[in-house]
Amino acid sequence: MTDAELAAHLATTAGELLLSVRNSGVFSAGALGKAGDQTANQFLVHALRDQRPDDGLLSEEMKCDGLRLAQRRVWIVDPVDGTREYGEGRDDWAVHVGLAIDGVAAVGAVALPGLGVTLSTDDLPPLAPIQSPPRILVSRTRPAREAIAVAEALGGELVPMGSAGAKAMAVVRGEAEIYLHLGGQYEWDNCAPAAVARAAGLHVSRADGTPLRYNRADPYLPDLLICRTEFARPVLDLVARMASE
Image 1 (cartoon, helix red, strand yellow):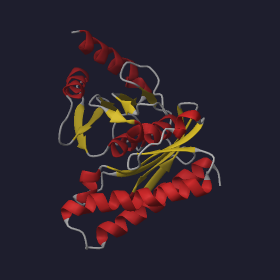
Image 2: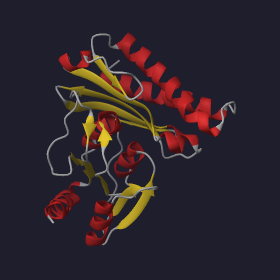
Image 3: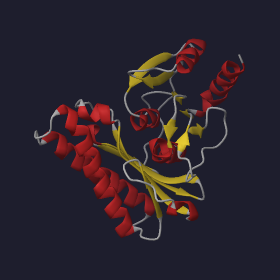
């Protein structure tokens, strides 16, 4: 099984487990998110250690022992990206299974279990026709002022959505053109989505245009831009202008 096939299989299976936990009816709304996180994390961690025992591993739900920092190949996973949406019974949450090689998001799969869809770096639909003015994805609970300003400058339409993975895959799936995030994320929030988006032919970078780097001692990643290539330069220029004001 190739790395991409493994990533897709694990993300899909973890998603099915999460749906089973949610549909079991035995957890209160407050406990459901934690139960789902722990169930999916245990599956992903054990499966990756069995299938790729020589690789490093970083998971949002697992304490990091630092051993991954000395390894070239590191799996970076988010068992439930969008725990709130998962717990609320929504569809805009995801499972991320990514592989960083020499600090680059090289392979990945993002499962959207509520939609019955998994997108991976070696199994992607062609990009849909671009829409102009663009649709710009924002948090459904706390939209960033910068993203709102970009939408206003481009005459774009704001599209509220849940998790980071759901937003990134909405651009891949042709449901939006721009996903700009400046509110802070971690490597597990965007490693797999970045790998999939780049494989789909999208622009992927930090908000200042520099490359995303993974498997660092501090996994915090402040910002992210995933968009159709036609909008990359206008968005980067607008963000730079706002930063200098």
